[in-house]
Length: 352
Image (cartoon, rainbow, N blue to C red; front, side):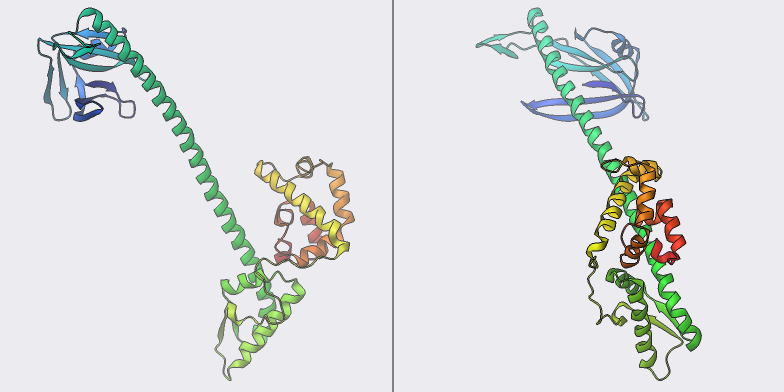
């Protein structure tokens, strides 16, 4: 039987197990108890092991107040082993009941009664064995706790990344909705027809990775066909992904336009700064020239970054126009690039 202090729900607990066969046991009772003074006194004592006889422990089971009597017979012996309990400063108690029969212990073929010398040997063996088991269990629990903490942090980070990705997709979707509306709204004003673009349609346009000069005729041609398909068109026309006239364009969800050789150095510069920007953001630092240069490999000064951006400014604007889905951190978070784009007059939906 064990009597122990439960720190999660402060109070004493009692659990009884009965050994039926070697290696097999069953729980007889598992209850919350309010111990009497005798149990409290045993918990205050410090010796690791004590042999008790004629044991009489009385405790009250709460909240039903049923009386619990644990009493050894006169011919029984009880080994009490104490384990320090840090939360309340006393000892948890483990009572092991032995029957004092002739054949309960047998060494080298000679049965022995539970005499004084044998009691000391048995007590020392059990204390050492249980200490090893307890230490291993505590280590296992510590490792399990670390694993659980790691899993919780990983799950939290995954949720945050998903939310960031969803927000980024929503922002990008809204930007392209503004882009498409800027092309279709003048046509709506002339015709009196409202054109509604579905999310699937906008995502398909985003996946085309087309420059602005190619998106405009795509939108206009699609509207022309839908508007003239009916003699009396509905005042609101919803445009779906299948309505897009993309025969003149190569549609690849993750395709990248071919970059001429004279843009390669500018493209490599943007890729390098974008990777450094990602490291700065992961480090939870502000995306400044100092921090961006620090995370470049090799590191560069803020002045060198400014000179490079100024030198490549025209090509950067061209690459931004041809690659609306790339270098998002530089476009949205790095102020020198944002200022450059603003001065160039590039539409906001392409700059972000």
